[in-house]
Length: 453
Image (tube, rainbow, N blue to C red):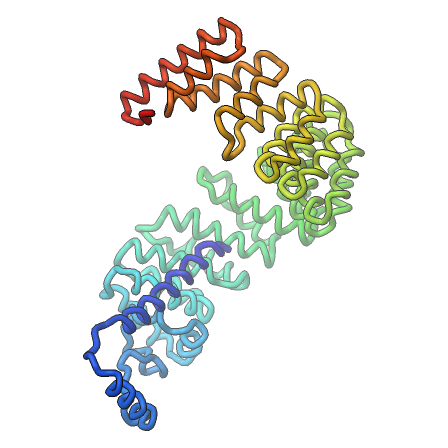
C-alpha cells in the first residue's frame, strides 16, 4: 500500500486544522482594557455554558454530517468521522460525496476529501470507489479514487479489482489499468498471493507496467509464506528472471539461513549477483558478522564482488573504522574496489581518524582514498591540492588536480593561477592547467558568475 500518499493526505488534514485554529487566534477583536478583559474572562468562566456561542460548523451527529460542508470534514478527527459515517445510510454517504462537485478546489476541500474517502473505504470499499468516480473534476476524482485504493484492506482488494476491470473510468483509463490495479494486486498478494498470481497471469503479456509491478509484489509476498511455491511460479514466467530476486528478498524475511544457503548453490544463475546483494542486505540488518562470514564462503567472482560492494557502504556509514579493518582482510584486488567507498564515508564524518587510516595505506588503495579525501566537505582548495599532489599514480594525480583547479577557476581564477604557477607539477601539466583556467574564466565571465577578488 502507498503509505507515502496516506502520510501526505494526513499531513494536509493536519495543516488545514492548524490553519483553522491560527485563523481563529489571529482574527481582529475589539480592544479592551486589562481590567475589562479580566472582568470579561471571569464572567465567561462563571457563565460558560450560557454565553458560549454556538458553533454552526460542529459536526457531532449524523444529521450534522449530512448537512455539513465537505471542506469542513478535514477538521473532524478521523475516528470521530468514521464513527459518524458508520451511522449514516449508504444514500446519505453517496449524497455527501456528491457535494465535492460544488466545493472549492482548495486545500480545505482536499483535506476533507482525503479523510472522507479514507473512512468510507474502510466501511464500504466498493461504494467509496463508485462515489469517487462520480466526482466531476478529473484531478479531484483521481485523488479520491487513489485514496480509496490505498486505504482498503487486502480482503477488499479482489472485489475492487473486479469492479475496476468491469467498470474502468473513461477519464482515468491509464490510472485504472496501472496504478489502481497495481496497488490492489499488491494488497491482494498480501492475503492470497497464489490467487493474485493467477489473475496477473490471466492478463497475459501486457505492455504497461501493471504486470511488471504486480509480479514483483506477488513474488516477494509469496516467498514470505511459501518460497518453494513462489520459485515454481517464477519459473513459469517468460523473460522474468528478475523476479527470482524478489523471491530471495521475501525468503530472507521468512528464513534467512535457508535463503542464503540456497543462494550459495545458485550463484551462477542470471540473477546470481542480485541474489548475493539481497542476502547481504538482509544479513547486515541482523548483524554484520553474519554478512562477512557468509561472504567469506563465497567463491571468487562477480557475485562475491557484488556482495562486498553492497556491504561496504552499509558498514562504512555505520562504523567506518570496523569496515576498514574488514577491508584489510580481503584479497588485494578486492580491496581496491572498495577503499574509495569506505573513504568517502569516513572523511566526511571524522577526518582526523580517516587521515590516520589513509596514512597506513599503500599503492592504489592509498591513491583511491586520497582522491576521496580531496573532495570532502569543507576542505580548502589549498589542502585539496596538497593531498592531490601526494597521490602516487600520475594519471590519477593529474586528473584530481585538474578537477580541483577547474572548480577553483570558476570562482577565483587569479588564486588558481597563482597556485598553478608556483606548483611543482610538470611544465606540460602546468600549461594544461593554465588552459583550463582560461577556459573556465571565459565561461564564468560570460555567465556573470565570477567573483572579483
